[in-house]
Image (tube, rainbow, N blue to C red; front, side, top):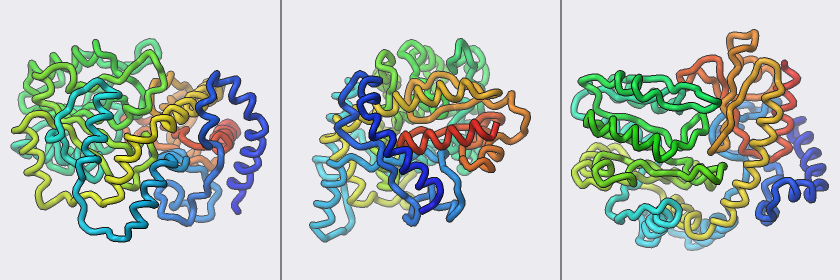
Length: 408
């Protein structure tokens, strides 16, 4: 057992003895129904997050998957599917489709027709398809920075022109500068890539912000691909998620909405996502672009998706309670670190840390030497920042923060 696992396990045992304190801090008993504190050793599996370090004592807090076991109901459904014993080519059955449609209605008050769904093996695939389906290789694809790196790569991979405009920081929140945003739209701009909730800043865009954005996109005849994969991870109760396509039929007719159970229920390896495309013509273009390139999903993805949306709401609510406490701990710690600043995280389990006042050119490399792997802000289009994933047991989080503090 490595030094990190030994320390984490020891800290976990201490955390267990403080369970009453945790309960009083949260003001809720929901997180006590599920175990988010046990440290699961992921090394020696096929994990991308931990596998790259071999025997090195490095805590990975970079890629956006969590170190928690998936919900018990999902594991039970997968065991049942394995016991069936036959794993042929798979299509989504009506129950999987109904689970998605019901979730969208229940959680987002969005009435979706089953034939609007197109299943894809992941969100990044869908981002690339959205760029590729444009008419010309010279067409422009606009997005904001900082942004999830595949937003910056997808246009280039498909020989489209990448266009970016910076979000502005105002009163501790990243927001659109709508004048600058509209001025960045050129004659050849055809597609806008939106992340909501925003990755990496953790913003939940308000209805008013999205309505202003929609007016500009409609005025310039833009297609919008809206990544809403983190919509199940809203941490601020007073900031509900608003799906862009749900604002109006006119906007829905030009919007591709991307969702998946992967982030909320820690199912990234299942490679199961879906696009919601209400407009028939746009849906056909998307499907035609995928033909011969994108494979069908595997049967376990459909099984996990159905169980997650139908049976795991209590687990999700408990997870949110746990993440809120972790967010509080990260914020309290980081904002006391010299030279680092962190804004409030409204959604996701990702903290965006401003390290530009530190006396170093590459903060991500610095922290890696100290034994913590964070995502480099340069990959998001914003050097001088790092992204920290706090979706992990408290003991792991505490050790990671301790190493960051010690390195400063």
